[in-house]
Image 1: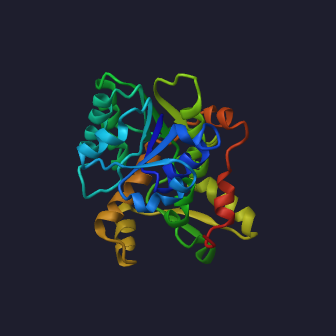
Image 2: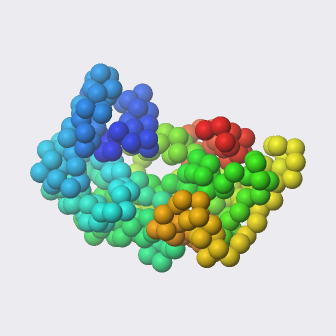
Length: 285
């Protein structure tokens, strides 16, 4: 049995759907906090189980009989995400799960300026110490976030940022699809594997792409980080969210998202979706 957590979310929901085309639906279960939101899976013959990282008893039942388990990372900044992950990993070990897969992030590191990457690094440490066989899917930074990270550049002609650096912008849809391929495969992937697009453009590079797309000059402009945060707050973004987002650019500038890996292309059997597509649809999403 393959159990997929967080299947009412965009990432693991798409993974579970792809998985149903690779293995029998009777071999798949989804563990979700709200079973009513997962009725579509039940309609397709996939078991829907209640599983909440904050409720250990629910995980014991949801993980029972699973030989492969995909744990979605918690993304609620108001909660102890590492603690929630620890609970899930301990429940997997108690249930005798043969291998745990975890949705991590490229650049997972204890010293990353981007807070989630520190959470991922801590979670990977928990997996390494758990005694379980484990695979960490280090997904490239999701390309659709450029829709809000770069601001209204079509109107202004500028991409105003607090720092620049290479990022292997990767389509979330590709990450979801390849996770299903890995889960269904008999191949063994131990520890972290990197799931990224094949290039890592800077925002300056993206501005050049945008210039070509719209037929007029688009520039990248790097401003003082404190000014950038203040401007975001003036636009209505909460201070915590502005500082959180600043960490993305600082991590990019530090090279945390620069690496690329051919594995995504190899497993999909096609080229990943290019970041140019995101820019082409900017403002229409």
